[in-house]
Length: 622
Ligand code: AGP
Image (cartoon, rainbow, N blue to C red; front, side, top):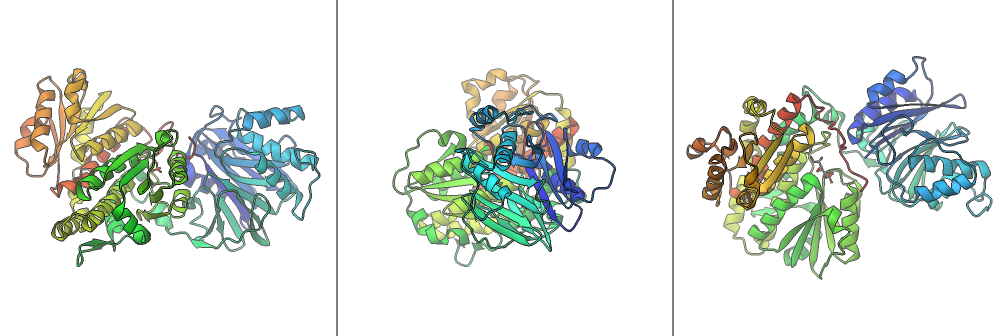
């Protein structure tokens, strides 16, 4: 939920830290700060609000510091103000820390440190980390009073001692006034990457803050730390056991994280979808044999084919994609499937019998609830697959096998291209499993042939953006919307509601259209737009009936319908058309007008589309 960046090298650190924080701002933007170590002195500058506020606070004097750490925050403990902003300096002034994660035993540790007369200034759990390191560093004894020992430097030892006391999650960058040539990073449960350049090192929460300096990176695992100096870097466990980590290539380029000519990353990513879906599907559909080739699953496809039950677990938009997956696994592969909110699954002591496959879906690959659900599933013997976008992310490295979305970094907090790619991957998997079980080769071929070119059906929707903007404008004063669909269009309705909610702050609810008469229809007035996803499908006549029920009560309807459907025009106050495709493939298409509807509503309401209030791109805390 926060963004960390740190630099040690032969360049001036300050501009690199600020630029890196701007690339990470989508991870949290309540407050920001940097600390620079220069001439054996540490200068800490921090401010509430956006990084631009921090820039205004920075002194105009040039800084030659070549070592520094920075942080942009999504508040978990303590209000989003300057005092609680990171970096946090310890009471001796020698240790400075930036932290992403949650320390669950911070209150106990804070209490113990106070018995040692250690003062505190903030309400945060992160300050406890700084003071704990500072205490061990100053005293040279561990909690039991034992003297520092071993070959490590006193700084490394103090960090290891402190980390061994922490319960919870952390991604950390740490510097010490007495070690102007040393930068330490440590990871447990929150992402942290060490970029290795020419005589320079960048530590960051994700690769977007590293890629413009180097594409060579070390991905730390939990309970590991990296020590970077001008001599090079070392990696070890926090128990001081040296570990060898191989350099990996960061698999995306700078232009993929640039805004280009778009006003917002979200709009850029909506418009990327013809390309991103093509990339996601590319090389994975073999029409000659009517097969799907998912390299990451080859070793377990047999188990998957024989599985008795599939549990899909995720959060937010990924959960909506999982609902599409459930429908497709049951319809196309005739495999019992169910969807669980990861946040619920992790605490429900779930029953997982022999032969169950769990599929975890996550764009970031760092969502804490989804990670915890994976652990629960693994503890109960399930094979766990990951459908993930960020290469090398924790979920990608924790699951038994998986499929990458391959859509490049998704910066906008509101997920768009990742959603359609998640649906594309689940669709491919359902077809392949179906083909291996009951689906005829002919029908598998029909679906795959259509899927292979589905991305060509997106531009006609994007071309309606001005029309969709007019629909948003006509309803912009409405504070409550309904999104309604049946069958595969029900998860699409949920996704449309979430998109609108999270960036325009309009209250929106997604429902199965047939559920309206069981209560929600009492809400209908002309002040509550009802968005119907009513493309041609097996329940088309039923959805027309639901639209009529709403209109008969004075409700205004915004209808997403199939191109050329003349019949539906009479039922729509506003009509958006989408190209026809196979019913099973329609969700990838039908979500896109709803993404644009939400985008335009948010812009018309004057909100920051890419950084909506209270949200962050990756929810790495529970
Ligand atoms: C979607 O627009 C939201 N930003 C949010 O619901 C998101 O889908 C959810 O937090 C899951 O994130 P993940 O896919 O990275 O796990």
